[in-house]
Length: 61
Image (cartoon, rainbow, N blue to C red):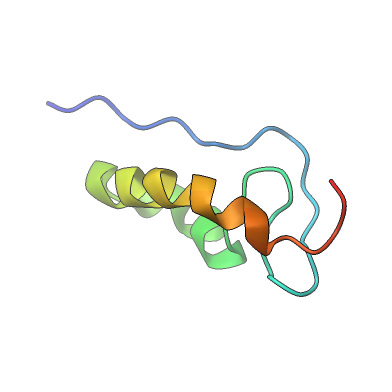
């Protein structure tokens, strides 16, 4: 059995208006809402995409 992937949430929940990403964890609202139902592989894919999303934020954060 594969261990569960923890959430990237850092309790800084603020949606960037232009990118529609959370400024804290860099996930979309759909990713945040569906996190509990995603498979470990789907979570792993999202986690690997997060680093590349930081440049999409338009708000200083």
